[in-house]
Amino acid sequence: MSTVLLVHAKGGPPLGHVLSRTAAKADVHLLALSELPPSVDASAEELCASVVTPSGAERADLGSLIVSSARAVGADAVLTFSEYAVVAVAEACETLGLAGAGGAAELARDKRKMRHVWHRRGLPQPEFRPVATRADLHEAAAALPFPMLLKAAWSAGSTAHQIIGSPQQADAAWHCSRQVMAESAQLGFAELHVAEAGAHFVVEQIVTGATEGWFDEPGWGDYVSVEGVVAGGVFHPVCVSGRMPTVEPFTERASITPAPLPASLQDRVVALASEAVDALGLRDCGTHTEIKLGAGGQMWLIETAARFGGAMTVPQIEEVFGLDLVGMLVDHLLGRPVAWPEGALGPQQARGAAGSLVVLAVDGDGHAWPDRRVWDFTGVREAVALSEGSALSVVRESSLPDGSTVPVYEPAGGANTMAALCLLSAADAPTVLRDFTALVDALPRVLPPAVPVGPTGAKAAPTPAPGSAPVPAVAVVPSVAAALPRLRTAARTEEVPA
Image (cartoon, rainbow, N blue to C red; front, side, top):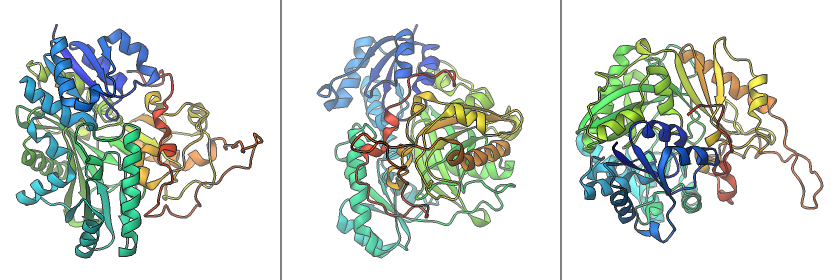
């Protein structure tokens, strides 16, 4: 049987899902750069030929570590599903002579270089400026229209995104974004291979999105993602996923597969994604391309990743279209024939729909919950009425244990301040959207209130979240480490089978 070295780090699809699909195709050796979720420990021992957790000193030269680990186990393929390890794995595959994303992987990680490539190709995207210093930010602020978006060039999950509404907000945004990146790195949510990646930023024009003319029903977000794969340098689109509106600044709340776009509009979206991926020159990898939708059929590229979409994107595709993208990619990297879809699949080929919802302490209008609440999935499932035939589950690997206090949403922390990740299956995409909308509205009512313990041990009055006003555009986070508790995940996964 063939041998695969799987490099695990934060982010990406649930590890339990990835392990089971990879182990069905090859002997798996797991190189764990991040701590395994407690819920996956037992299955990893059963599914993997070996599990190695390198020391901090060994990780100092990550490329060499991956190469030596691959050679030690005789790996026929090396892969990762984490955004933070994509570049290191691609470079290791180049050294080993194995199939991988290739040298262009960095173009799909560094948002500055990505945008420069697309600019040279004349592809539609927001106007941008690379930023490395406070002075760079002020120069960009003088050149771009307000409001503008400051984002870390190597971040994921909307971490360190800051909307700057005026020149007076630039310094606070700069301080906050740098602090968030530094503290996120301590928790493993940062690029693992590029030195000083946390100091690289880009500022972008905020383009005006619109859903009219794209979707028949209200309530959809104004952007979509095209999921696909590059095999031998040829891009194969798989499907398009829709979104709920983001939470300010641009934190993703939900992904829904498939996006209910008319065939002609899906073709236009997929064509732009194909141009974006082709421009980067990727070779063998999954892809995830986000596209902003505008009035009159306008579109702008947001970003492309040289890996499959994170959260539950891959399991959603498997449920809806019957495609095991993890297993298919493993087969391709091992040189086996794979029948990729001839074109992007849409609602006509779907078996129902599936979506994943990030549980944040923010209501449907973007307002912070008025008080603190305790996460309790069992109570949510029993209390929230969903559409007939809809099924709700929780991804324990990516969620806090029941009984945990839901974190206060921090705009700069993005999805890292989530309490849980839920999966919903329904008859079609509009039903998923309606059920998620009902769920978001119900959460602050059906979750039990938190009763904090004061410094003397006595129970104190509930601590209110920061107001019920709209989330501020720029917020200095006093301690992001305290606001990113999703690393301390639950110890069971029975609600969502691997």
